[in-house]
Length: 306
Ligand code: RIB
Image (tube, rainbow, N blue to C red):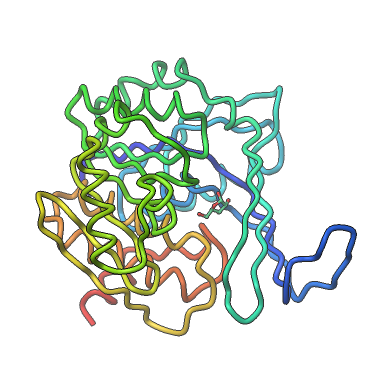
């Protein structure tokens, strides 16, 4: 087991509906399938890292309700240690997930509930935990000021900081300069830089633009095309690889981030860490669900060795 990984983020109960298309306003259509399970980008990343063998700690807020119990259950089974503020004035996060039959593509609405009230004070309460980590990992589903404070506390303590800028939003250069590795997907990279990201050359230009704004390195996740790492004018491209047919891509980016954090916390070199993250993501897309699809270490090692 490597150094501790601290994840700041949210848990959602994902209510996933599979259908041929989204209904129009005022219309009712029949679905083809339903699944209720654990999700939320931060929680998915924590579960991915925990199952991959990381010593993982999750900072969040939950409501005092059944979805909160679902969160605690999935963390317990993945070996994730919760650092939870239970907020009786709100509810545990939930997400509506539309899964398009045929393509497996998704569209998501997130209501973070209690996790939308994570505060700078919550980060200060957990400052010693963050300072003792090897890797601090966060996203943008909880309030931005809390994410920035987490990055600031981690950076000041020399902890490796990873920001998965999802969902995309405008970020200041001051916040970006607290980030060692930023991990946007193509559309998030476009949103952050205003540049198109459809080719490898464009992804490199967008990564360089993020580095010019203060991040240490950029990893642009390219879906079925893998990931592109960029630092100091040099690139590493790792192709995507899955051990079977793709069933559902919800949480694939989370799988990559959780795997990457685990590998870096173990001291793996960056190219090896990218391959590890891609293996976690590659296995996860062959299974339904978000957190439920995250693989265990033995499966990851076997896939990497194959
Ligand atoms: O990245 C996938 C996740 O985004 C889902 O689990 C959903 O809860 C949203 O947070």
